[in-house]
Image: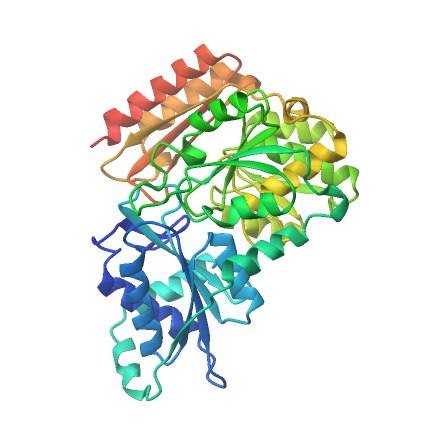
Length: 450
């Protein structure tokens, strides 16, 4: 991973490096240069979430793309998986999403998809990065006589919505279902309520009035408190919270209890296995997944595989192993038999399908997985040395692992997008788990803290 790209694209504070208009122009040029087809007119699809800086970065990226003789097709506000779908279904050379996902409004980011709707590999990111920092790209502009044009895809949200609705079998239509949706004032604010309503559900929508600054503000997948209350108050069957760009899902059962990403994965795995849809029988999650997921999958006779943190690493493992179901505890779910990337709305549709198939509420379905107590503490760090080479941290991990034995585990890793070290401990009881996690967080703070 180089200087620009983190675990999910390029990210930072809007109007500060690398999220400046000047950098966006250069990134637009680099993406266009790499994905351009010399034998026919090339096009790149661009979408964005609702944050205020999206317009500024969109215009800059478009300028860079057009300067290379490539056309830009704008979807407007659309969830990240919607942009991936529009990229692959329109025969575009690449797709770009302007979003910082679940981050605060003043952050923004750039995510890139290949023409087939898949995220870039590390090698492809490195190639773009080298071009961004290589001054030679300016000289190639002299040979571009026909600059690109800009077009708007006016029905992008409808096209994407229709694609999602087609994944639902007709006999599963949602009449008699009461659903509460939290759109996080983000990219799903129009498309998600429309899809569930059109499928026949009675929908109550929260946080669907974006103003550019209220995206993810005490709402959405990171803050399901209002959703939990609303589900119980309205007697709803289920609640769904999406993040700012709509690629992750957190579900709330009819009792107002949050179902974790791992639990959703276990429920969907069981449903798909019963229906004979779990091709090859593996399910992929990350090293951060709860120990309970592995145990639940083992009981179901499903092979559990793990990857590095980040939905594109889950995807890489899925492709290499032939898996069609994978995800992260944070709520990214990938259903490779339907889509090329994590999609919160798609995951919600699959979860309802499982509920209908079993004729059971979500609270019952989630009982197939016992969630081990898990505590995560984030520590701001001044630098990110290899943790294996920091003796105090190494010794601290070893001593906690020795005490926990097979009843728990420790995962310590740096964030791919922030100057943060994440300490995660799982254990037999919440008090022990909290104590060990705090112990390790204190060591990290002492040795690496700002």
